[in-house]
Image 1: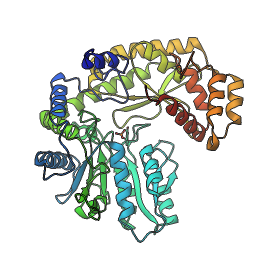
Image 2: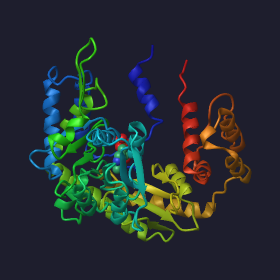
Image 3: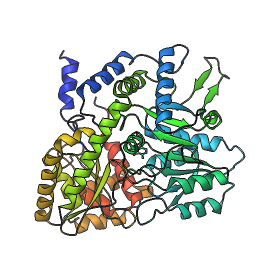
Image 4: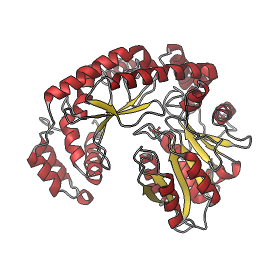
Length: 475
Ligand SMILES: Cc1ncc(COP(=O)(O)O)c(C=O)c1O
């Protein structure tokens, strides 16, 4: 029998690299091999430990309290603040919504007010927990429109259990105006969650090194909870985020206990019950090893990379920034001479992963970059690749969607999309492989252009059908 670890290493060569600073979405790379090694060894050492019962594994409780304490200090939390380590940003966001809902048992049809740029995790929470999401368009600078958010609260203040703002938003990397929204929420006795999942770890260090950071932490009156992901810009292994609450009373409804069954009394602080101690140990070890001084240096590095990328983009006439980044996320939009999706493909051929973002609410397709500290060493290469990719996209011309395919999509109803419809679309667009299964083309620009043409509801239905086809057992 062949060595399974060797087989894993072999299979992994098909994946995006997690090191090297060339993958500008999904992964966050400190570029420090020792820090990675410490994180991985800690994950391995605790892979079998169970965070279900802190009395059985007290070292996990100690690590969680250490990590929450470090995060609370970072985010200006008051002395009475508490928190929980979750499995990731989505779980932290889900719990913020669930906790807000369950803090108001008097409300029959709970609603929450969110800006249109809020992370999709909140729409997932709305879906899971039966909370109506009132989505408020953002302003022209892509930041939440505070006045419009407040007006939305006031349409039904008694039913509003939560207001959410981002620091920063994923798609545009800008920080919402937290103070007016949080103050309005506080005046009305409504919880205000700040989603700092992606930027929450890096923004405080950015402020410490003298960059201008809009106010967004617990220093802002009225902020009741904050989520911040350690598996993003704390450069920890995947599988942890911290959800902080201003007081223990704010956290209480998040806890779940059930004693009315014949087994152990179930007592959970998160959605998971049994949970590996590995990710928590990995995050704890990485945060201990880097400490404030390490994060300050990594923040200098990542912002130097961002500033050089911004300056480099300025020199490419076909590209512009969607918004001046408040953080480490950059969104690039193209002029009419070149196609954003083709740029993503061209970057991939040059071994850079940049993420396509579809058009939304009048904003054309664009290119997302989550810049890592490790990218700094390669910024010149990145800008060369970007310049070449733009030139190649200009030369390739616009990406057309076959009118037959476009017309076919028009006939489909996302609410009732059937397997036959999906097969028809695959056949019409030439995406069926020989034999069984799907065969994705090397270049995705045409597929992305086709998806971009579809309404969000249609895109969701198509991608769900696609995932359903991908996820089939090997037997
Ligand atoms: C602002 C924000 N919130 C929430 C999330 C969800 O985090 P995760 O992918 O860890 O579940 C993300 C992920 O990018 C994010 O950027």
